[in-house]
Length: 226
Image 1 (tube, one colour):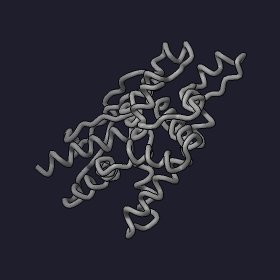
Image 2 (cartoon, helix red, strand yellow; image 1 turned 120 degrees about the vertical axis):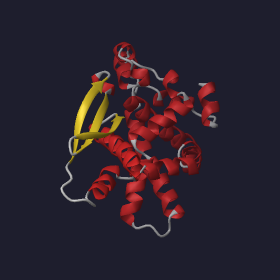
Image 3 (tube, helix red, strand yellow; image 1 turned 180 degrees about the horizontal axis):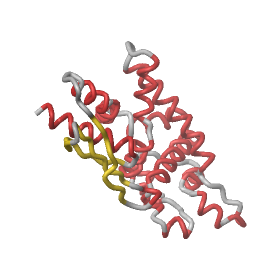
């Protein structure tokens, strides 16, 4: 616990809150006799806290952006992938409490579990130290300049950009296909290919088919522009 507090740069007055934030539902179910709570309620609250803090941050950082753009940036900023990156930065996986089955199934490194636990930790800090403490943590681990650059990169729609580039010439046939799927069902990696007039021009991967296609389109754009 002390090690995690150091990574969070926050010392809990009530460590039971932090302990609960690390309780996966599989672990709580195995300890029903002790009336142990899982981190699901904290995750719910943490999602709201994160939403407010990130909205306030973007509202102040981008005074000229309309609501639609702010909404899209926030969605990218607080997405599962971003929260997973925060969990990795905090080494949160090593502190999780999992049921035996979830442990054996690789739950300690599962993206969704780590992302949910990150939100639960945000809520634990909020309940223990108030919105200022939670906001300081969220700013420190998520809302920095480097992260915003990553968000801007994610917001780019490479498929649309590629389509617009290809359409500058008539009678061009652009298509996508799934070339491969790797990994277990709960953590698959998809490989997509993009073809122009039947010729392969880009390959990309991602944790969803949509993400893989965007990655392939990005690679194709880079190849065509060169």
